[in-house]
Image (cartoon, rainbow, N blue to C red; front, side):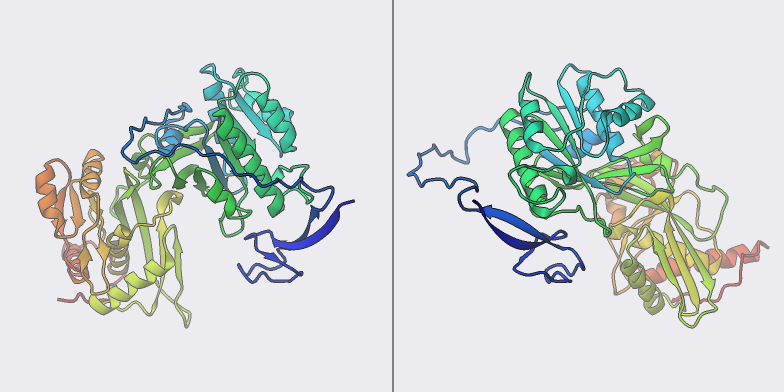
Length: 480
C-alpha cells in the first residue's frame, strides 16, 4: 500500500512548505497555500535503475543550421508576433483576462490551418463541443474541418492525438483544467498544471505538432500557475485589451524563435477578431481635428512597427488638500517624474492642480519616448494653448530637463508623414538623421523642457493677441 506524504504548495508561485501558512513567504499572497499529496513507496511510480547510459555525438558551433520551417496560421498579426509563423514541435502559452478573446483568436487560427488540409485539433476543458460549435457558427467557421473535443484527462488527450494522422496544430483551452491520473491532487493545482504541461509539451516535441496552451491570469495580470511552465514552453504571448474598447493587442513576452518586442493589433467585431494592418490610422480615427488644448500625438514604436496615438491631458484647479494624479495607459511613476521636471526646469507651478492623463484608444504605452508628448499635452492644457494639429511629439525627458534622443526615429517620421503630419517636435539629434533619411515629417528640435514650455506659452500669448480667448487664464510663466 502506498505511503502518503503531504506537502503544502503555493498556487500562485509554486513554493513548497512543510506546513500550512496563511501567507506565502515567497510571493506574499494570502490564502494561496493548499495541501497536496504525493504517493511514495510500493504503489508509486517505479524507480528507474541506474545505468551507464550511452554516448551521443556532439556538434560544433560552426555547423550548418537549416532555418526552422514555419506553420502559417493565416492570421498575419499572429504570425508576426510568432516570428513569421509557428515552428513545428513548439509550445506556446497564451494568457489574458477572461473574455478578452483568447478562445476566439485560437478557434479562428484553428479554422485557418484546417482549411489548408492540415489536421487541426481544438481541445476544450472549459466548454462543451456544442458551445464551441455555437461560437464557430457565430464567427462563420462552421464549415472548417476542425476536430473538436471536450476532455480534461491528459492521458486520454495524448492517446487521441497520437491516433491517426499526426496533428499539425493543437489548442489546449485551458491548462488549468487539465489533470493527470498519475498526480494525486485536484485539477488546477501547481502539481497538476506542471505535470499536464510537461506531458503535452513532450508530445508536441515528439510529434512535431504546434501546441498552443491557454493560461489563466491572476489579478495582477500574471499567468496563473507555477513560473516553471513559462520556462518549459518556447513562447509566452499576452493578449491584452480594455473591455471598453474594441482594440486587442497580442504581445510576446518570450519567444525562442523570434523577437519579443513585436505586437499584433486586432479589433473585436461581431464576426470575431479582425486584423488591423494600419493601427495608427485606427487609433487616430476619432481624433478631433479642431484645435483643443491638452491633446498631443505621440509617434511611438511597438517592436518594428510605428504606432501613432493621441495622448490627452487635463490640468484643473483642485479643491482638495492633496491634488489628484490619475493616469490611464501610462506608467504613473513616469508621470510623476515628468511633473517634477516641469516644475523644476520648466518654471511651472502644478501643486494646486489636479492632473489627469489618458492614452486614447485603450493602448498602454511603455517606452520613455512618450515623455515629450505627455509634457506637451500637460503644458497645453495648463496654458489653454492648442498644439499644432499637424505635429507629432517624441523624446525622452531626463531629470536634468534635457530631451534625450530615442531609437527608430526614421520609422516614426515616415509613419507621421504617411498620415499627413508635417512637423515633428523631437530631440535635436534628430535633425541630422531626418536630413539623411530624406522622406518623412520635418523635424523641429526641442533641446530642453524649458524650450518646450516657452514655445507653447508663446503660442498662448499669440492666441490672446489675436482675440481668441483661451479656455482659462494662464497661471504659469515659462523659464527663459
